[in-house]
Length: 434
Image 1 (tube, rainbow, N blue to C red):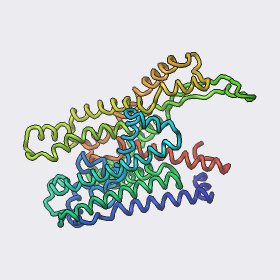
Image 2 (cartoon, rainbow, N blue to C red):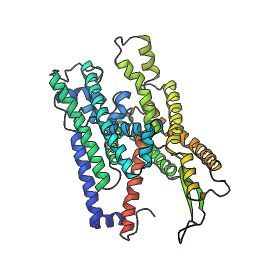
Image 3 (cartoon, rainbow, N blue to C red):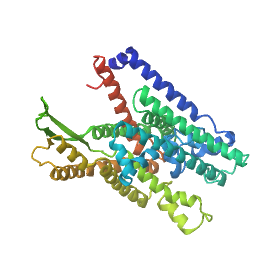
Image 4 (cartoon, rainbow, N blue to C red):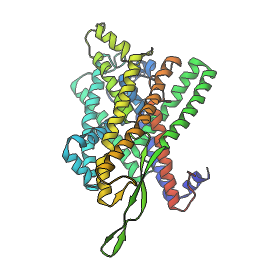
């Protein structure tokens, strides 16, 4: 507590914190501003039965938007277009040599990739806004609601709605980048953190109303235990020692130092969970556009590949396998053992007991595969918590104490605290983390 008081007493840090809080308040305000063209009264009535969940197709987007999606506000799309664009650009580095070359160019290349990410974000926002409006018009957005949500369905009105949602996404992207540059923490991560945290009171209130105070207390206790475990795993890492040989450059001596390569247990972060949920959302998205809702394949998909009122072992099994697959897949892309081994060899570095070059590459790949195995299982277990909460507690599908939401909440919180701690250390203060 003393460290937080000192943070607010530091003029520079206090200004950054208040600036960040002000933009987060603007973001939360935009969540409740309806998009022009929708009948907000009818939207409120239709969204009432699903305000704490939505369909599995839209559940994650609604969670990441802080409930803005089901309210069809100007920030309905939230940060999902930007997240998707960032992941796509990162994956394209493997496919497009030009992107990989830009990544290696340093700051100038990174700025170019950031610009590509912005353009792709706008394109994805237009696509997602059009899809949402199409689902609303067809009645597949608020299933079972027959009220007229869009009174005027003329082309200019629909185009204006798409434009408003797209501009809202651009504004969110701008706020995230400004927070990163002038505030505290990663802007986009803090926006997601705020959105998820806003869903906690509603989800916990639903458990208290439906299950009573004993179950509510048990959920709180289990949540604390799970959070402690997640913090422990997220902070865990394998440190591979690296020794640099001494070398002469001109008249100066370089090298002769020891360092290490940190490899986290959960090297892939929350990305595998997002990928798996997105893949499993496709079957239900296909059924939303089916002409015959009573078709056998539609009924089978809704029974076995949709997270609904009953627990499906097929859904859970496919979900776990996808998470494990994407955990290894994404780690293999982001952790380039060949590049790390080449850089170590170039600057005279080596792992004690391992020859430089190809042997070092094989050793690094061996270590990352062994570390990633328990990391992938850990991700799968955490991601199954919302499924069990849905069945045994009657919670919403975007239950905030598991899956992507819990990992983001803890990860962003730890990262932000570390940044505040670093700022305090710069001012010769005692840090928050001891």
